[in-house]
Image (tube, rainbow, N blue to C red; front, side, top):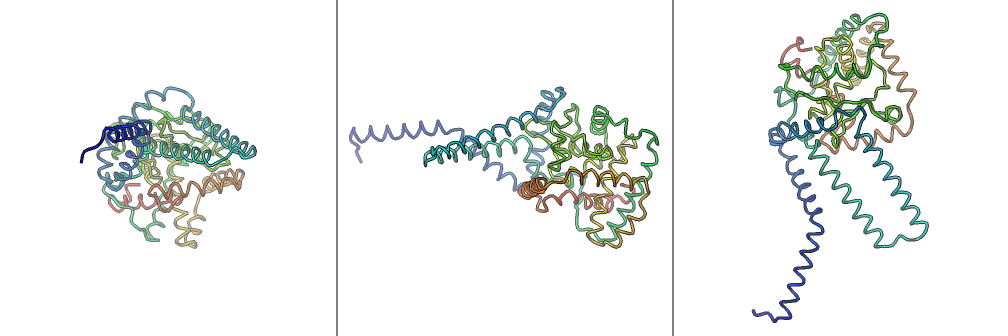
Length: 380
C-alpha cells in the first residue's frame, strides 16, 4: 500500500504527538512498571529474601542511617507533619472551591489524577525502601522454624515460664529509683548494644549506625494508640517515650527489628525478644519477658480463661503493680479516635500479608513456642 504525502505527514504528526504525551507521562509509566514488578516479587518470598531483604535493603538502609542518624530529632516526623499540613490545605481548598462552585468535570479529573499519582508514588517508594520486607521469607526461614498452631498446654507452659523469667529479672532491679536511670540516650544506646554485638546466636541484620529517636508526636500518639513506628522514607525508628518505662526497652527493640528489615509485626516482636532476652541489663530483660508474658497470658485467656485466671493469681505483687500502671496509662488516653485509627491500621496490616490484622502482634507466642519445640525450654 502506498501512502500519499498528506497521509504520511498526518501519521507522522500523530506518532510525534503520541511520543510527546508518552515523554510527558514517562513518570507514570515508570511507576506503573515498578508497581507491577513489586506485585510480581511479592509472590516469591525466597527471591525477596535473597535479593532484596539481605542485599539491597541493608545497603540502602545503612546509607539512610548515615545521612540522618546523626540528627538528634526525627526528620521523618517533620516529613509526616508537612504531609499532614498539605492534606489539610488541599482539603480546605476543595471545600472552598465547592462553595464557590468551581468544581467541574475537568477539576474532578485533574484532582483524581493527582490523587492516583500520589498514592502510586507512595506505594512504589514505600515498597522499594522497606515495604517489600513484608513479602520476605523472614526469621522463620532463617531459623528453620514455623509458628504452627499451639495447644493450650503449650501456651500455658510458656506463660508460666515467661512469668518466672520476668519475676527473676524484676528481683534484680534496684529497689530505689529503678526506672529513674531509663533516660532516652541510655535507652537507645543500650538497645543498639545487642544489635551491634558480633556473633549473636540469631541471624538478624546487625546495625552499625544508630538511627532510633524519640517521636515528636509522643503525646499525640498516646491518644492515637501507638508506642513506636518505623519510617521507611527516612530510615528512622521512632519510640513513644511517654509510655510506661517498663515497656520502653521492648518497644525500642521491636522498632529496631523493623529497621533491620523484619516488617511483619509478629516477626518484629520475635526478633526484639531474641535480641533482648539475654541483654546484660536486667531492666531490658524484664521489659522483654514482661511483654512476652502479656502476649502469652492474652492467648491463654482466649483459649482457656479459667487457666489464665489461675496463672494471674500467681503473679508477684511487684509485677501486678507494674501491670496496673500499664492499664491505668492506656485507660487515661482511650478515645473514639483511637478505635478509628486502630481499625484503619488493622486494614493496613491485612493488606500487607498479615491477615489477622492487629492480632498479628500476638503471633509472637507461636514463634516462641516454635523455637522451644526445636531447642527446648532452654531457648527462653
